Length: 345
Image 1 (tube, one colour):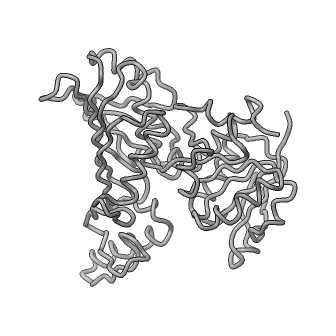
Image 2 (cartoon, one colour):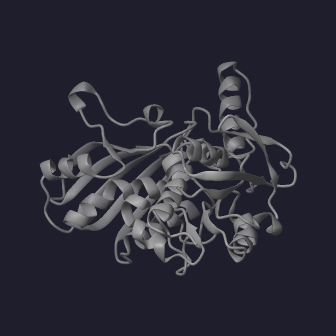
């Protein structure tokens, strides 16, 4: 099998590290790994296949000879360096929000719309973590019954806000348990002037607010879902909430289908859906939970039940590791799809 020179931009960050781990676990045909990061992180090392690999500074010229570049260094870096990587012949799979809504850039979840990746012009976008797990769970239902409306409330882990948010949760928890005070500085949004504690708390704000009263995270779920499903008419109403969990996003999802469904059909579709693990046994109190999803690539679905008030209403509980399927694993899956189906130069 042909081997590829693979760059991971943001290699020292939480998602970048997961990308490197996933490349190894999935036995992706990496001939040479080129970990990249900011100038201040250059010189550090990452572990790959039992050896230490030095991190280099992410600069335009560093992409010479790169076949695939996995980006997870934020939208600003992606906007600056992704075109440089593409210009030098790399195919970029970008985990930031920079290009997701660009009509020229495929927004890809392999289990849902993998074929769109093959139309790339050098750049492919990885969707938002919350969107990914929701559309994986809903795709089989969408195909069989159609979906008119989605109402989703998320319970998002702090790792989605980066390493400093994880540290803040752990530090605040220790302080609270010891009877001490906390001084939040990261959540809900580090760049804003007001911060709230996350330990023993929930924050009904993920990202900044927009003029319509929804947050940027919530609007990502609206717009990305429509693009991925190629359905600009589907109604999506999200509320995104940060909870004191380190890893693993959970979502309460309510959908109204276009056509009638039976629960037996729903269960059958979910059991056979690619990337979905059905965990739904109320009698034994078995349902998806972030602790059990951590480190797993699947999207877990449970608490499946018909709505009490709408004849075509269905409720689901959806959980996934936001650093894996919500980011790193999905990106590597896209790269695998390109290798398998001839989508690389």
